[in-house]
Structures are given as structure tokens and as C-alpha cells.
Image 1 (cartoon, rainbow, N blue to C red):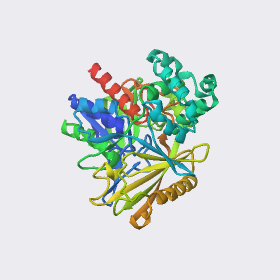
Image 2 (image 1 turned 90 degrees about the horizontal axis):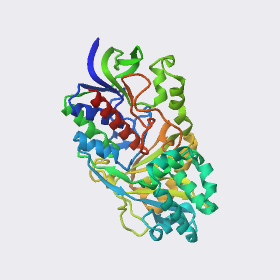
Image 3 (image 1 turned 120 degrees about the vertical axis):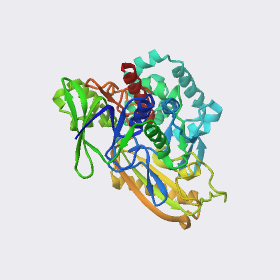
Image 4 (image 1 turned 45 degrees about the vertical axis):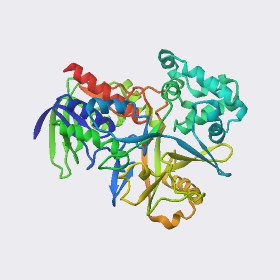
Length: 460
């Protein structure tokens, strides 16, 4: 069976959905195929007994998270496509330090407001806060042209130039908190553009029909369907058809093993760049491109998560019900070792839990096996039980979740050059967090999708 389409999008991830929505909205004959039975993998959520569980299908590969970071390019895409993304935020970060139990809310608006947070999270002495902000002010004044030139400068080279070990340690701690693995490999240029000039802000989706991160995915899927496009799930990519250096379409297989050949003018691939070797002969693509594709592999992270289904909201030590919709991060000891974090998505996302119930989500993202990740979650859970006295009596069910790398995107702030949006074959576009565009975390996917759609529309 052979079909003909103008555009075929492989992967109903965040980037694939955005690209598909923009092209369908523009009137192009668009087909989106995905091997899973739900759109949004891996960036969305999965239903479970009336709850919506983030981080998604175990076999999905790419950016996973339980919060949306920034939503700048995603918002641009939503406005252009007419996708009704409803969300709350941005929310703030609350840091918890053990032992001792000190708590500080993140703020970078002024030295005075930031001092408690910098002390709790980054172990920065109050006397050094002014110096910290002097450095930040200088970085913020850097032009985009200059920051692009600084992309190849690593923190390992830059931090010693600050002339202050404590301030340098604070900036290294920031890189660690952003999952830049290893922190010494953080790109100064990317740090300036994606953090200093545009501090990270997180938000939570509040969709009318779906919960959690799926609220950022379904609105774009609705646009595709309403504009005449098609989303075909449970169809796994077998190979990409190539002729004369041009991507001509794809071959997919459904859950029964039935094969469909799809010819297309354009192919958008929304997967991890180096996974393309599973569908295209490596000899058809220059070795330099493959080197860029594999540049993210050393920065990949797995994730381990714990979910608690609660029959009501927990109470804090002061006896009041929890009302904090933001993220809680646990830090341990004098060196502020990252210990994971948690939040209650059902405080902001109405569909995250059944009516009257609540969901607590605790996550540890780091270079750890399942066993080590579970140990980290145990420490986190012990603190949660102390922070919410009596929470054990509220737990109706609990599950531990584990996703192998690539899961958390540790390469967002790496200076290593990723692959261009315009792919290594004519007519092929790369739309994922392994694409070389501005942005961090999910924003990379959204920006890549915008660029791919604009290029295709300009050519047609």
C-alpha cells in the first residue's frame, strides 16, 4: 500500500506536534505517525486509574519533564497555530536543605531578594552576593553576537577567571541544578542566552480534558485534526525512503505488522538525531553530521520517579494544607548535593487526579541506575514524610517509575554543536531537543519545529 502526502511527520512528540499543527493550519496535507497509542510521547503524560502520570511511555526517547520550562517558543507556536494551551504560572522554586530543614524561595530579581536562596542552595556567603550579581550583570549585557562567540567557552575555563572561589562555586552549582552534565562542560554562551538573559521559569498545564504535561501536547493535536491533518498512532517507523540524496517518504508498520509506504514532499523527523541510523543507511550521510548527532550522547540522563495517590491534600508542619504549586528541590549537606525534588501537580492541573483526590510526584534525575535512583527517592520520601506529618495515612497507592537515558536533557547547556534543523538529506527536517537552535529543555523542540515549518512554508 502506498500513500501520497505533502508532509509526513515521524513522532508525535512536542516538536512533532507543533510542526504538524503549524503546517496543517497553513493548509498543507499533513500526516503525523507515531509508534505509541497516545500523542505527546515522551514529553506528555499517560492516564492511570483516573490520574495522569508524567514522563510518559517507557520506550519513548527524548525530553521528559513534569513541568514546562519557559514556554516562550511554545507559546509563539500556539498563537500561530491557534492551539488553546491553558496553563498556570510561571511558578517558583522552593529549596529545602538537610540537615537543618532551612527553606528558601528562589529569586534572582535583586541581591536582597536572592540572598536567602543563594545561601541555602548555592552556599554563597551573604558578603559575596553583591559580587555574584556583578558577574550576572556583566553577562546580561553581553550581546547575542558575543554570546554566540562564547558558546565554545566551557565553565571549566571561565570559572577560574572570576577570581573568587566561592562565587565560582555558586555558578557551578547553578549549572548542576540545570542538569548540565558534567557542570564543567556548561557552555558560557548558552548559559548567557538561555539562563542569564531569560531566567528559567516553569509552569503547569491546566487542560479541560487531560492532565499534567499532556495539557501541552493535546492542544496541538487538536489543531492538526481540526485543520484536516491526520494523526496515525501505533505505527512504527521501519525505514526512511531516500533517492538521490533526498528524503522521499517513510515506511511504517502498524501493531498487526501491516506495512504502509508513504511518499511525501517533506519528512519531519522528531526523534533523537543519532537514532536516524536505524532508518537510513549511515553511508548516505556525511560522517561530520553523525559526529554532531552523537554529541548529545555523553550528556544523557535517566530518571527515577515516585508517585503518591493521595485521598486529600497533605498538611505542612504548621497544620495548614499545602498550597505551593511550584517545585520543591531537596539539597543535602554543606556541598548542597542534589537530592531530587517534588511537587503536587493536582494543585494546578485539574485533570492530574480524580475530583477530590491529589497526586504527589517526586523525581530524581541524575546519572544513576534504577537502584541508586530508588535510594535517592527513599531519602527524598523520608523528608517529604517529615515535611507533611501524617501523609502516610493519606496515601492510597504509590508507584516507582524508571526511564533509561536519554530522558532528562543534560545537553541543553552543553556547548557541543547539535544537528541543524535542515537535515542531512534534502527534504528532511530534524525537530527535537537534539537540534541546533536557541532555547533550553522543551524550548529547543518548539524552536526547531517553528524553524522547520517556516522553511517548508517558504519553499511551498
